[in-house]
Length: 407
Image 1 (tube, helix red, strand yellow):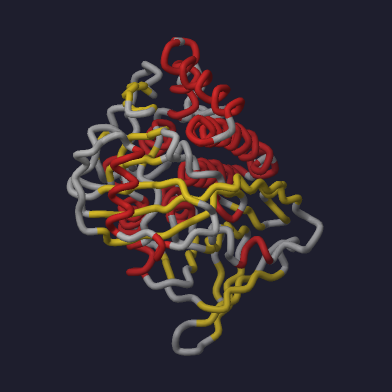
Image 2 (tube, helix red, strand yellow; image 1 turned 120 degrees about the vertical axis):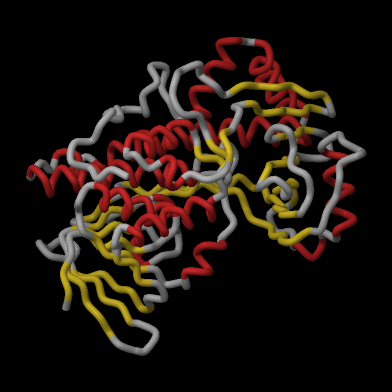
């Protein structure tokens, strides 16, 4: 049996961020991931790291190391019945801006940074189980590919293994309250080797919602509203491109080879509290947010930052204040971002093909966004993740973390 301070379950964005920030703080940890390194590195997900998260990485001296992609110019294009409206999500504050950075790029760079710093990351860890979570020294057990069983004792467990991971299921029934919402909307998501748009594009039409996002210099991610029980096989290449050209209002939209397509249901879920004993849930293990607004990965990064700082406080100075309030501080932002995502989801879908009363309400909200500086300012604040004073919600990033390792 081995021992460490923190066992991190999961090596996605949440887990690799927690591990890397702990490493920068001089706190030892072990990361367990049930998948292979290649599988984790190739998972295609969100593509924008919001301004708040970029500044968080900057405060840890990690921006240049872990954020690939290119700076995002802060311009979104809304296209309503083919008519373009450009909206800025810049709040006018100084400092690093958001980045166009696909999840797999961020994970690859965080993993490399953690391992280059001597980090302990164990892939293909099977049958992970958590024990004695309310005791002084929890134990995490797992099995390696050769069939050998291992056990690690620790002071804390970071559950970063997503909505279907073992961390949350290790919490006894009745401890957590689940707040769930099904939007009743499906999206066909398509990845293609096709030219990216000049700006991330969200389109509304009577045919339904569609979107076009960059995923690299020569690839794009597209979204098409569809019934939530639809099947990808129902969408031939021809139907995909015809649907996109119609809904995006761009008959000349360039096509390209489609490399991936899937359908998922838009849903939201929040578990309260986000901690049990010495187990702390991070990211999708605690909450799922509708993809509209790009908050899912960014909420995971926010949780990871709060947890790493809280553990550092305990290890360095035996101050457990931040750790005891971890759940309440996280959930304040979670509900704020859930509300924004819900507002944007309903607005852009209702403005297309909803019944007339709801459609006109949604279009009135869009018109206010396009014409009112106050509405545009509130939208920018929510998109960047910054409050009006340039702070990250209730947290201030220190300019220099004393004792944190440099480059």
